[in-house]
Figure: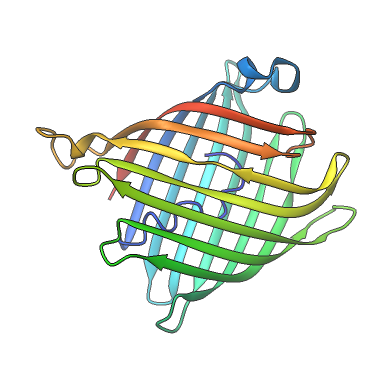
Length: 233
């Protein structure tokens, strides 16, 4: 959930030919940071899709923020990994963009290379991606971005999942030139509990959005959520 998920859950879904999920987050940003996030909506939905094919994989997600009056913001990212060979490196292509009631997210076009690691049981893994980033209509449009993602399934039969991403990129704004964002998530997978049907793919958990100089706000913020997720596979 939220803004720069760039690959995000690519590694988490790497053991499947395809996977989709829908998340609903209750966000505590406006409660913790009244001055900086006083208008931030409480509810955000996220739709994610990951699918592999013979030439690599495609990932996208769409975030929407909700007010009583309707949708207040929308943001999406789509990423393509190209791999015509059998090794852990792939060519990475990506687009980011969206809009809010207060300011637009400028179109961003990214290209680079990804390294992917999964252990033999696919219980843990990570990706690292280095990219050139072109930010349309930015005073300094030519930039770079470094992204890492991770996943760790632990507990009995993968009862819990710890996953997330971290982005660090260059972008000229009124508060600085470098931006950091990370969104670690922890999930309790209900279908891994004794007596629960394997097809009941509901997870409950939390995410913490950690940012520095993001969205034209000076400083570091940590915003937790309470969340539900349903996975289709």
